Structures are given as structure tokens and as C-alpha cells.
Image (cartoon, rainbow, N blue to C red; front, side):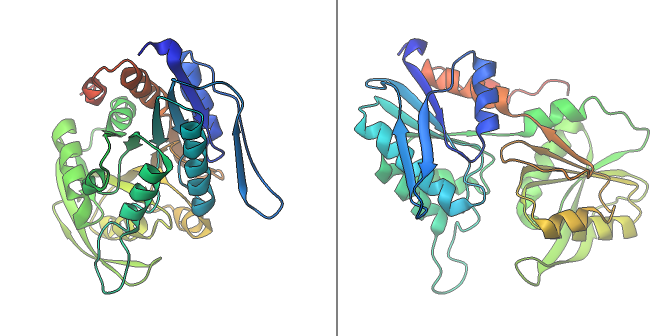
Length: 316
């Protein structure tokens, strides 16, 4: 399949990222009408011929999550009915990813439900970044290309200099594998904060495994909404002598509670990506672009090349 058969469209969740991706690829963003009827129903019309084309639909399922998910499903259905040869759902942020297991009675596995909906709508491939858990790839019976934001973070962090030793810390047990990968790559120490979640928005940090006194600390996580886990970890790290605390989080869906917590100053800087739209509100938040990374992945998928080289890290 030649690149001339490539068509890229975007929903309304993060159009700025889609435009930046297309600019990095040198490919125009496809013309599509994605709007709502007065009663709130989504309406989609693809305004150009896509018969036999390789179609990529860019949409993060960030808030309002259900609305953006429906937009994506309807766009996929429209592309399928317009006889697209292959339809790839490009999801920089995959919503509902934390509901990936039955951890209490009578609860759904919504991450699997979303996977079923995407396939039923007509998606033939998924391109995602930093899924909350690796097993979500197994929820699909279609190919899934899973990218990592870590090369973008490493390139940014490589430019920093400090005389103090660096410790990479996971704010919970679930992120230990990610933290260990960062520590190995950066030649840093490793630490873990044991936590107890008291509610959906409140977290209590219990203890630290590892030595952080007199060190700079890099907190790594894949997603934050209320910043409860990050702030609880930063507080106990400060109490144990950490000097400078930086958080690197792939997906930030920051609500008012999170913004208020970040104003406490416990975290010196929050580094994230533009997988979802970010309003920094004057806070020390650095937003790194993943447009080039995703754009390269799209070009490689379109030309049936490997995406493995995109995991290579420069500067370390």
C-alpha cells in the first residue's frame, strides 16, 4: 500500500495534536464534519473519497469521555461504510483503561467492553500509547501497536544537569516495572512508595522502600486525574529528605482538585505529554509533544514497516 492511499482524520478530542501530527508527516488532515445535533447526538460525515484507502482516525477518549468515545465509534463506522480498506483507531489516550479487571463482585471489565465496541464498529487496527496495563492489548483480536512516551521523556530529561544523585520512584506498586525501566536507562537509584487508597480521589502514602535523602527524585506514572497519588508520594518523599521532586506522567487529565493540589509546591515540576489537551493554569507543568512519535508510527504502519525502532532512546 503506497503512502498516497493514506488518509488521516480527527475527532474533536484533541484536534491540535492531530494537526501537529499531520504537519510532522507532511500529510494533510482529512476533511470531515464531526458535530452534534441539538439533542446531543453526534453526527459525522467524511467529506472526501476514502474507498480503498488506509484510514487513520485520531481520537483520545479524554473528558467528556463518553462523548469522545461515541465520536470515535461513529467515525469508524462511517469509514467502514465508505469502503475504507483498513481503519486504524489512533488513541493517544485510551479511556476506561483502569477498569481492566474484576477486582470486586458485580463490576464490569469496561476496558474489554470498549475493545469490543471498537472492533464491532469496524476498526481493523489499534495504535495506542502507554496503556494503563499491558494486558489490554489482549482484549483485542485485531493487531495493536503499543507505543511508549518514555523516549520523549528521556530526550527531555537528558538535557538536565544536577550534582545530586537521582532516584526514580514509583508512587505505587503497580508502576514498579515502569520505574525500574527508567532507573536502568538513566543509571539512577530506585524507590517505591507504598500507598493505601481511601477513596477515588484520596490516597494515603504509607512508607518508602529505598533511600531518597539528599537526592533528586523522579516520580513516574502513566496517568493522573486528581494528582492524589503523586502528591501523597511527594509529601512522604519530602519528609524523608528528597530535595527536588519532578513527576513524569504520560497522560494528565487534570481536574480542579488536581490543579489545587499541584499549587502546594510539593512537586517542583510535572512533565507530561499532549496526548490529551492540557491547561497549565500557570503551574509548573511542562507539556512534551508526541506528535512526531505518533506520526512516524502511522507512516510505518501505512508502509507495512516495523515500529520497533521508535522505542530506541537517544541521549542515554
